[in-house]
Amino acid sequence: MKPIRKIIVLTLLALLVLASVQAFAQQSQPQTQLRLLLVDETKTFASTMRVGALAGILKKTGMVDLSVKMIDVTSSYADPLVGLVPPEQPYDLVLIVPRGIDDASIAQIWLVSEYYGSSTPQYALLTGLSGIVDQVFQGLASATDVSEDLWPAGYAALYREQGWLR
Image 1: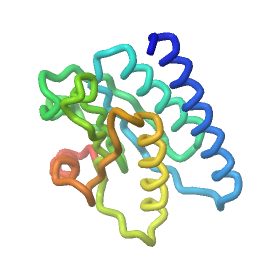
Image 2: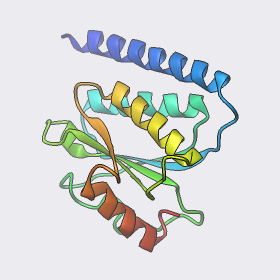
Image 3: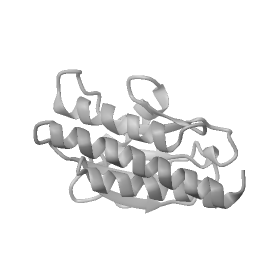
């Protein structure tokens, strides 16, 4: 597929997801916002466009208070926040888009947070966020949270201790 077609398809996909999320948000009760840090480790144009589309969708939904950091790492498994000063107010969620999605060496996008029980409002928002990530990165990677994999759970423990997470 030509690069321009990929961009058009990605843009249409993002608009479709945004319309769906907005329709759902209008039907539901007012939601609690999560403080979210989006960490972008990607290097290719296509992946950066997807991360940009994800950030745009997240801002439009009103689900999260979004901050973005573009981080250069040598490996997808290197801690992207090492050496950085934690924020004054910790985040509820750190979403890491690993460098490895560029070369298909990793097929996961890590949703790093506390473990939320299924009856909490944070769980509902996390589930909605996971669905958005899955749609934007369809075919490349899927969202994986602390209940599904030890890697985001390990980051959650580390980031809580360092002051990145509540």
